[in-house]
Amino acid sequence: MRTVVLVYSGGLDTSLCIPLMRQEYHFDHVVTVTVDVGQPAEDIRQAEQKAQAMGTEHYTVDAKEEFVREYIFPAIRANGDYEGYPLSTAIARPLIAAKAVEVARKVGATAYGHGCTGKGNDQFRLEYIMRTLTPNLQIVAPMREGRLLPDGKREPWTRSEEIQYCQEHGVPISQTVKKIWSIDENLWGRSIEGGRLEEPDFMPPDEIFQWTCSPADTLEEPQLLQIGFTNGVPTSVDDREMAPLDLIKSLHQIAGQHGVGRVDVMEDRMLGLKVRENYECPAAAVLLPAHRALEALVCTREELRFKALVDRQWGELAYHGLWLDPLKEDLEAFIAHIQTRVTGAVTMRLFKGGASVVGRSSDWALYSEDLASFDSKTFDQSESIGNVKTHGMQSRMYWLLKSGRSNSS
Image (cartoon, rainbow, N blue to C red):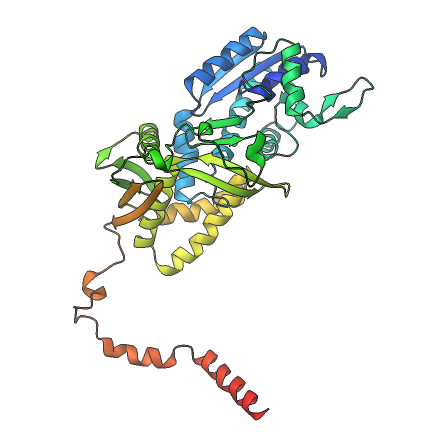
């Protein structure tokens, strides 16, 4: 029996895949897997109901705690970012694929299915994990492979054609041709795409945002928030120790009511396409700058310079979904060593869409008030004379030579 494990969100693309797996790809048994990485409970419930209505063998996997500890926290320690995007969807895909692999092994699947298009990044992220862990299984992607025409050829699906097909074949969906936003949500952030949001000069309507207030409608007073870190990961808010999952959820709520966390970027996808992306990530908008501020307090200048390179490379690997790459392991070994000192507290000021660092403290701080203060006599300032005299010596020599040649000509 040919069994396919379909990575299933309950959305338009993956719902359309269920009848296609049977009718066009001729699988005998369709198994759907929904991995809970922090989607709304209603979305999980609807995915289960749709899967049941369409007669699949369905699995829901609760991976929220694992997502926070093994994916979000490493992203914080690496200041996870790609071109201004805090990597919310990107870091969830490898975990979702890994859980699909577990189910595939359990049911003896012969193939995987997913609803990714041929233009996006998720096809790379999911299939990399699947091919690495189960290299012998087939992978089918109906949205990427295109709509089957009567003459046997295929052409790309349009959103309108997908909706029409679902309506004609009794597939339960919530999208309409007029309201066509595609939303992906997990514990670390929301991505909103589709329709006119793809246009670089289109102003996103407030209706696409759910976690953040419009800055015009936020609280009229700023809020100070102290984030406690232990070994590079957040452990407390305003001196209150919190479980990882609760901490992330709490910061979404607190920062969101101040309008913090809206991201609108032109993003360079893996295929080279430049696309406009909208994200909501209130907790990330607070935790990432707080973490950087604490690192700046406890790390040497040379460590910070090198870690900026490490963080950027880590972000690239995470964006590309290369979660099992040996270089990522190497980078994380360095990051982990640095994080043993990234323990302390950072005070953030939240107000009208902004989150700014206003204070930081740590027992590992490379700061001495006595040495830094202008009122201190501990540091013998006269000892700087020799250093100042030799500062920029080679560039000064170059300038003299250049000036002399210019004058002689």
